[in-house]
Length: 301
Image (tube, rainbow, N blue to C red):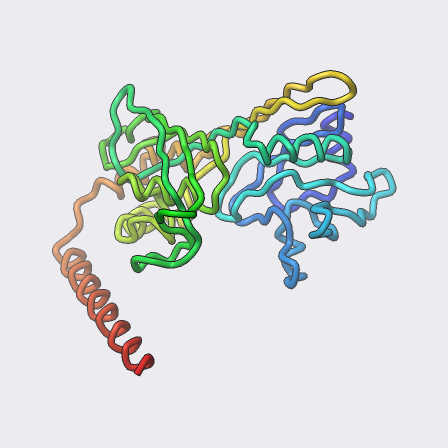
């Protein structure tokens, strides 16, 4: 099966790009930000925003009902990425291959590499392993669905490695992240917990810093990218070794110093008027926070 044929007979969603394939029926695509791994069950309008513009069976985890007669009956989704995250995601047109690879994901026997632009500066040789107990729920004023816990909470393990700081020392760095478990929002939460929130993260990020980046660059995206995936699985009496990679997005390189216009705006000192407006904004935010707490107490009584 050639890449050209795969591109011809599958109705890819907007911006979805094939980055690799294997004769056993395995496909690797690059998912853009905003695209869904699959449509939500009760939202038919999501169909146009998904990896494939086709029907989706949630129980069997596969796309089906393709109009092209040359297309396979089903395309299996092997894992997922949040809509806000870009990068490599795997599909299979062979059920046997799909089942073999899903077993690898369930046993965490897949090498996944993410790249993230974070607020914070690293240093050469900086690396290690983050281990946290995470539980779903809202706590500590955060809007995200997970928080650190103890007891019966699920363990989240992520190997991290500093890649480089931004060229103009604005206060950002590129981090390489290798999750060893697959918890909800694991990378986003652990980056925040360890003092390096991912730029553009609306749940766990530094919201004032995110506003500065947006004002300087116009970028509202989450700067988290699934850059590479490596997997080994049995097929046809042999072991298949498969690697797929999606290059660093242009906006990542631009934010780290590759876009002169962005750099000029990021490093520009705010005017007195802008400083005054930022102070007023902080005061408004603090008043809203106090008011929200008072209203919450009143509703309880």
